[in-house]
Length: 132
Image: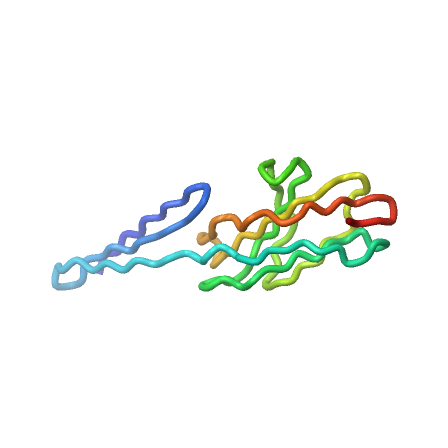
């Protein structure tokens, strides 16, 4: 059987299809869906002195891991990768004093499948010995 795999990735979703021809010359197709976006994303201060935030979410279907992103420019700003935890929750390292953080989570399935971004969680402002 000859198989061709097509991959489509956009800013908000990924999808792939396998198209093949079996030994008898008949077309065979199978589609696969990527993981669902995480829901219920929250960002909670772990303690006022720790200056860390616990990011939590509801697990997604068809997922092998997650990517946690953060922004300090607002919920519509640029997000940077923070970590790749296998499951929720994820607790950040000590965050920088004087910044306000927003978090998003993306579900992953293998290296090629990514969900759309979750809704932004936050804001969490880190002060000297405070997190609010």
